[in-house]
Length: 418
Image 1 (tube, rainbow, N blue to C red):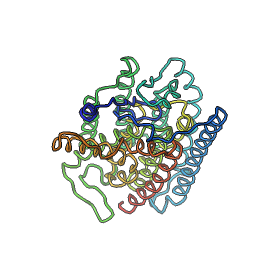
Image 2: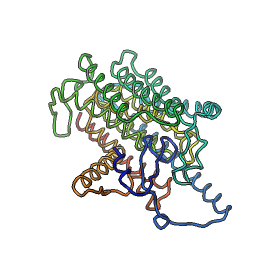
Image 3: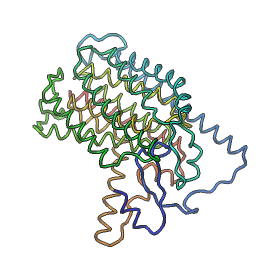
Image 4: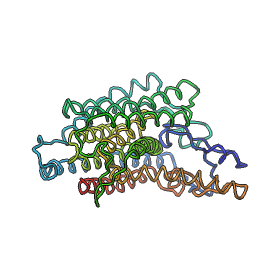
């Protein structure tokens, strides 16, 4: 969709490659920025090293703060869960899978990251990109292989062995991870070119359609699952067969939303952990087993953040970002909690809308005026913030704060709706 947008420009365009640390996983064409657009800073080597060390410490501080906040939140939810579910749940019902997943993923990272680097699972930073991106040219990718399987396995261990919802959500997550893995393999073996966008979207639509039909023929314990009803704070909304279309749309939109947010170090992983936590709270009265799945995936995300925080030692790649989007969509589809999903995943929604609006505005103005105009200077939205001079850890911190509020709001809306 960006081909016409960049080709019409007389100047050459930057191409940001996938999973190179500061970029989204899809290729995005950006116009070059003049020297006056970005602040110029002259500093000695000692000053530069001091600044880098300060940002690294800030990344550690942000990650540890997120882990503490999520742990305290889940402990509080476990403490008052009997008021929410009206059924006796085991102690630390959500906190245990969260912490165990986080610990296992963090440990696996220390073992597997050197192996990934040894086998050169590394994305090349394109020469057209900004020079600052080249500092991450030796960082390995395919980090989704670390945290996605652990999150799924821990969820199956703690949830009921006969939980149909957890099995379905795990299957959808693995299917989306397979699509992402195919794209990553092509990018590593075929001159760093990813899976064509249209092919990738069609595969996502196929997975979403399969999941919607699976829901239609499966008996779920969820009171709203595939009864064509969506719970809202004001009551239940009957969608009929539109429920299946909404399911497929959720899978495609969430998968691409997380992929676009996989830009700065720790941005996608942290916001996904918060979104999974919000969804776990929202679905707890509807399907307590599925809440375990969300808590386990949130824990795997924060465990991965210990290696993906600024400065990242590994990137999640398409396999990680698409799997997270598929898991979130599956939780909403099994319970009808699409509205809490929209709220909890607000960061992903903003990132997707910034790209959609940019492309539509460009094509509309091009058809009417002969030359396309840009609504934003650079999409997605985090690129705009970088051009405004915001530093990478500060952008991530702001996203975490906003996503925390949205996760709490989404969880509350889910509880009220249920």
